[in-house]
Length: 210
Image (tube, rainbow, N blue to C red; front, side, top):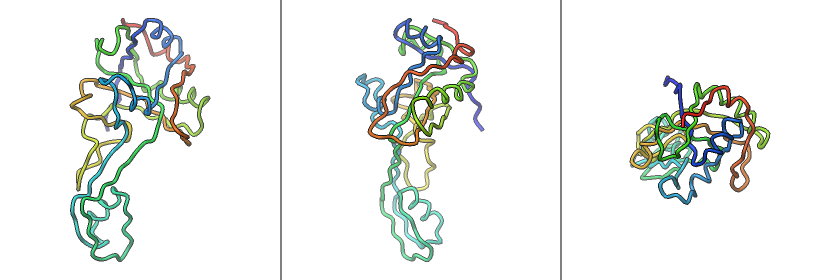
């Protein structure tokens, strides 16, 4: 099992925003915002969208490889089915929207902003932040971890790239060394809007370093 990062950094473009964060006023963005961000260096139009291609395979329903490829393409193969042919069937997994708080393991990453807060033991903030978000949404589930830098497109028997919302292409984003908090909610009507939550526990784990 991968270890959790012990230290992450949150960057800001204004010193006032860094101070607000330390005071427990935390701005939480969304996946839909990340997809539509006007800054081309940060926009990720395929955020939390995975695409799978079955390739070509034939067989019966007792062929476990065929059944698994079909499942990943959204196709159910019933028991006793004979002569199945899969040929470049496409399946798409999409996390419609979620709340996100992005940090990085990279110290001195001033391209994110000139003002920086260091967070120690950042996984300890997941539960307090989740409780704070529950004041704004129902059915909140929190997740925390490093982003995996690999392709979101897979084919045939290649393994799934990682959890939705935690996979980004290495060529564009690998330098970010991102560690993120992500919260799914029970019902998403349209798109979620960024929110500001109150979480006093932030001060316990955070300090200004720039």
